[in-house]
Image (cartoon, rainbow, N blue to C red):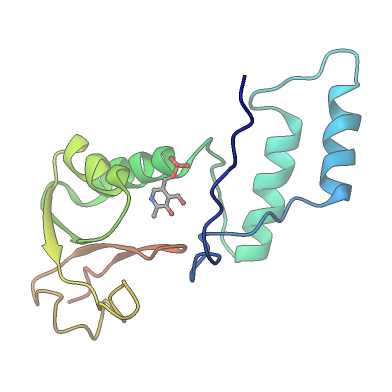
Length: 154
Ligand SMILES: Cc1ncc(COP(=O)(O)O)c(C=O)c1O
């Protein structure tokens, strides 16, 4: 096999999606957990402890730990449907496919709004001129942050 030269990008991307934030302490905790006799790798005591700690940190009564952002979207949309019934959900034009798929899957109608070409997000859903005045549900997904607001107070 011939030696091949990897072509490196000229410079790092301007906006990295994320940095690796898994610490040595995290890795050691995981190794310790896996070294138990019968570690349970699905929902168990660690998940419950995390949900409780997370709820306290957020100042809410309950939290549900899920395996992915897509699952979080799906559960959130399902909960909104049960709470408020069918309708429209305002979504940005630049976002993850599961942000839209979850809306469709739960029987809502996605309504796309423009994004700010500088930030790639809408600045504020409540004040945005893009947000239709009759909007009751907004899936406000930024490139690295997700907020889902129910603006039914309008
Ligand atoms: C708003 C939003 N939707 C969907 C996703 C997709 O998540 P996953 O790849 O974990 O399913 C992400 C991931 O960061 C996200 O931030």
